[in-house]
Image 1: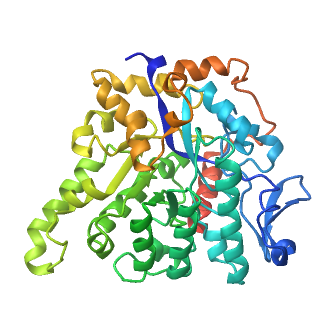
Image 2: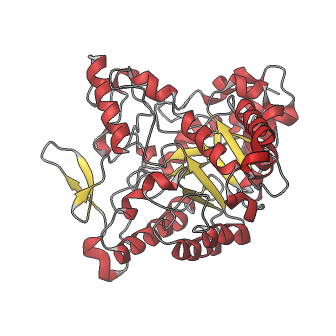
Length: 430
């Protein structure tokens, strides 16, 4: 296979929500209280909701910026590529990188809607969740149904309402819901109780995949306040390792053996050791712990119910048979700083030396199509879905790296580390 022949579907990108997203979807009684963009004294844009603000309008939306402008900013829409918040421009940016389709996780409500969980007025919060989902499904994703795969927010504070919303979004054609990798860190019941049974029952019955994005617990790992930023960034997959281990032993996956979980942005290289260790611990200690996994070992649970993805993970590709070749997917992570846009095909292809075309196709698009019940070829001819064909349609897209007029990253590594430590503690990543 050549680079130009690949078909790429990303299972983890991010949308920066446009200021008018609630206009057509929030009930009239809540219109004056819906989230809205307010221009700050310093010129920045922030989402205002109830008595506070979402912490960042465009978390790490740095696509197209020079590396010295990376960070948690930008602080206003003018400092981002239009593809961050405009669906038409998003697919043009995708085409320029040879990417056929993608799932876009939320930004200002946090990765699984923690902003609305914290709301005082839960009736307002429910209206906002529903309005967000309606916008995402009927405007953002529907603008290009062959290119944008919808994903919904959950109702985090009520399992019955969460189940009802899953059924509602499924009826609208959405087959994915983002959720927390560790609900207990959000002050919610964990995966070892029966609290979430209505939610997982609804997901099972509708075929909706539960996506657990790193940071969806509103916590990230950092070793110490003095550690350089790279330490926290390098440790982000630890969140997924913890979630996978927790869930393999959870009652949720015993009671709902058909529910499917997508581990988003966690990578693959660590998987063989984690599931091997889980099996060893279960076999070695079950005589006294008496943990009931329904006749399955942890590794079997993982392979039957969990999907993984990676941005750039050569080790994960090499151990693909141990991870599970039928459950590995690829991600672009546009517009974040870890993203390989716009050279994604070239960077990914480096990991495919010696990999069969069959395995390449599974990793790049077939597994994603199966996981999310997504068939772009029913809308767009397959020959128009390749890296080469998409790039040929987007030769006019400017992908040159250029300053967006954003604040330069701190020259003092210590101060930047302290800022990241504060963010990690506050949960602003998720």
